Image (cartoon, rainbow, N blue to C red):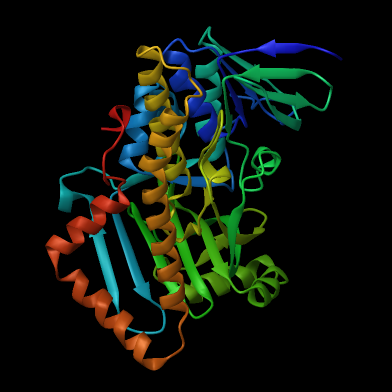
Length: 410
């Protein structure tokens, strides 16, 4: 095939973050093509029913505002969301513990646990309704060439797509980032994440729980299934050798290990699904932009899941980039203008870098074996729990209320 298609913006990667960006640009009347390597779209009639999907996201109120602006939150909420009003974090090797409540900063919820498939299905439906957005599936990028005033993307079928601006939203191992020659710093976290869905003897009461164990953090994320609050999604980040031992256990034995690690706070555990595992590598692109190119979401940064901030950072990337692009278009500036992309990078890189550093610091502090550091973290947790002004600041940070938010997220 020898075919060239021209557009205003090309988004490579049709996941949650790439789709959110395409929807924001499409609402502004900008012509966008989404190139996605998936061969088939989600079947919307199937998502959000039955056993929850294993991959979920903890959406902040800021991300919820973005999805509300796009008109997809009502569909998501009708299908299945699990609001949580509290969070409890403690040290499994000591007595330090801290609890957060949404009411402390005047909110009804700290956030919502939502299956990734539900979010993506809603965004795909929104893209279908936008006349200026085209979605192309089974589109695998094999080449990237810079011309005088555009980027040219080549697909594996030989077709070519050109636009003044190409956006990489194609994940942590971003092929487009590699083709653009943008270096990335990688840090092995030393952790493997185990993910599955559980039923607990005691209801979670809308509280997310996380315990820091000697080998890594274990999070119980509250799910509501047909108004039943006895389900949770878990993310157990642990050493590879420990993960291997856990994966070798029979379901009942793995459930017992979970219950013991959680100190029995939710009673007896029943594992309802296969246990999935993936290696955790923290990445940060050295540059967020190149001439006519921008990185967003995991293509720009991937973070340890212990704070559940990954997709929220990506949604903020999408919202800020869309805001800068639409402002540029209103001023008659070319969409791939270097100054526009530089403003996007300035607004997002610092916040993302700070969050990556914070998560790495937590991981190292709670993985430390030295008795003095154990004492410091236990005293720190318990002391912070009594300092309401500091706790309010921490809750606002976790809720995404940081810095200059784009208009659609305020």
